Amino acid sequence: MRNTAYFKNKKVTVVGLGRSGLACANLLYDLGAMVFVTDRCDNKITRENIRKLKSEKISFELGRHSENFIKGRDLVVVSPGVPDDALPVVWAKNYNIPVISEIELGGILCSGTIIAITGTNGKTTVTTLIARILETAGKKVFLLGNIGNPFCGEVARIKENDFVCLEVSSFQLSHTQSFKPKIAVILNFSCNHLDRHSSLKAYLNAKKRIFMNQDSSDYLVLNFDDKEVRRLAEEAKANIVYFSRSDNLNPNEQAALSVVSILGIDRALAISVFKEFKGLEHRLEYVMEIKGIKFINDSKCTTIDSTIWAFQNVSGKVVLIAGGKDKGNDYSLILPFIRQKVKAMVLIGESKEKIKTAFAGILPIKEANSLEDAVEQAYALASSGDSVLLSPMCASFDMFDNYEERGRVFKKAVYNLLNSSRKAQDILLRTQN
Image (tube, rainbow, N blue to C red; front, side, top):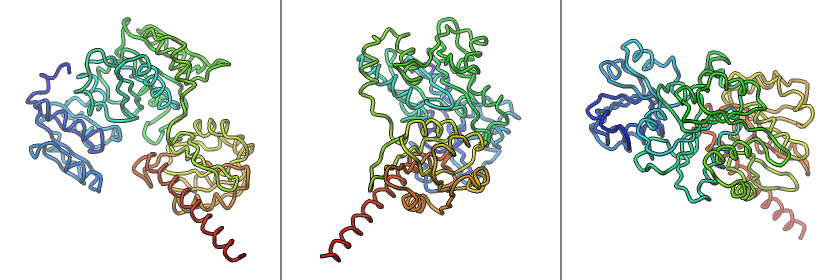
């Protein structure tokens, strides 16, 4: 690792004790820092992570934020879920204490080549594709960030010739100061996260921090087909590389190809990886078919644009399961696609009423108290040839720890549905006999 001596004996508070916060706290302790951890939640996850801290010397508080955990510190490191108006961030600014994100800390220490990918949609797929191409080319690759392990949990293992494929969200970028990837990628930009960012401009400004510190030795890969993204070239100092949709490759593949081409990877090798790529869990993932009805897990979809993309890639009519923690979405934007593609909706979570209001009178709408209940109701509404699609358009945090848990619950509910269907069929056959 680089710059390790800087953190020795520094007083550092980590805000948030999820996966990223835990990784930060343990890394800073290994570097010789005096570490403090604060999290406003006191629940099963935070209590389990307290037990995973490397030393009893790491001070912590759960269920609250205390100003004494911030005052007098040399640095504050915030987890992605911590908003700008959180008390620890406000206190740190009042005391002129630097505030950085977990990926900033990882970037300061990282010896390898960082390829950072952001955008409203497609980040996970593109990050995974780039990593698989590099691995196929014989490179040592770490797949980190919003996908896989936290950056800080792996940075100690990353050597000079290694590559880091880092999926970064606007939340992670918000508190970066010196973050400087060798290759930065911005896939697209559309309305999202207005529950967190004060405006669309603020959301875009957070995304722009991915190239803020780049210079002429670096590369910025931009989507030429997205006008908002294309304009960012005017503000960049890095070498600009554009990608665009083609007849043979989709935008995600074109973005990945542009990145590996910068690194001198053969195009034919990249194309071979694309052909073998079977998709990702929780992203338009085929689960199974029951009596001619397909079940598709798109739990990672937390935006309207992602659901539109799902509609365009699912054949036949759809019974849509949607809802969760609203992100400031204008659901009316999807109305033409709802009219064309969806035969019924089953709604869950905090956003049920808002979504129901947007589509009232357009199609049958049911409400469910749980995802398991939603799966059963959607199955009852579907016919052979239809698809039951979980594509929530919302965050998962009102009902689940993350989108992965939401997707797993959906798949388990489908498997239970299959078992129930088989039992009912067995009973019917025994009755007939």
